[in-house]
Length: 327
Ligand code: EAX
Image 1 (cartoon, rainbow, N blue to C red):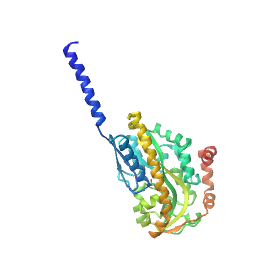
Image 2 (cartoon, rainbow, N blue to C red):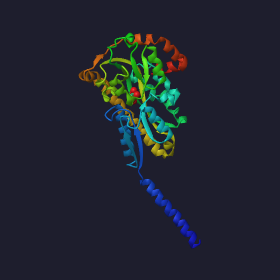
Image 3 (cartoon, rainbow, N blue to C red):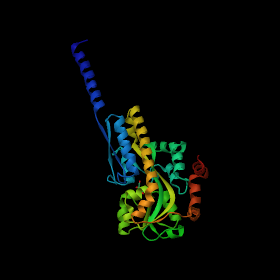
């Protein structure tokens, strides 16, 4: 081998060694964002994900979390993750059906018996099939998490049955299933991103909104809402999403770390939802809200008969029953 050629070989292999070792140590920083405060069920999810990823990669991958909608509402976060300008996101299914239409079935009111039923469906084959539907849209959905069971709040009157909802101007998520369902209850629906809700309630642009206790507590909606009724009208899933190209570029081992860390995040998140649900009513009463705890849910379902028939047609009775009957 000629000397010059040897130098070239040495140069290449030395260069490779340098770049390989820099790569091993280089720190990758990713961004994640939620629309509620850090001290919340969603905060538990993203903080746990970040902690577990950092720990399991020995600090090689660091996730910086942004809270309280500081990077935009949930739709904007999804758009950024889809484009790849943001690596990670976490949010409710509010805007998700506009990106991944197959997930809309999960937002049908009174579909799940309780949280345990919903969690079993999401962790089982139906939930996993739905996570796979994110991939052709440019997302890797890492795991289902939970926003909670949604209840209605407003500033006009105590809601004791569906008739009391008629004519209330309520903010809804930017979710076509919710909008159709609440219209069916006689509500005047105003779709809006969550970061705008507090001010809209404060200024009286809207009379009310609906969200799980976890969100109402974390966003201090009691400061701008007088009445809450535990309607439990819909289970609200949430989900960890990642830009698919970013996920695909990771080593198999790192991909597994993200999937495992997301599962840990979901566990911490669900535990916090349970805690908020257990203590939420007492806390909201303490903060001055008027709480109606018991309503006849069958009356709400009966009022929604027309829209329920539409959902049966749109989603297929067999698909809805597969979820309803899942054990
Ligand atoms: O994800 O938009 C909503 O009402 C959501 O439930 C909230 O932002 C938490």
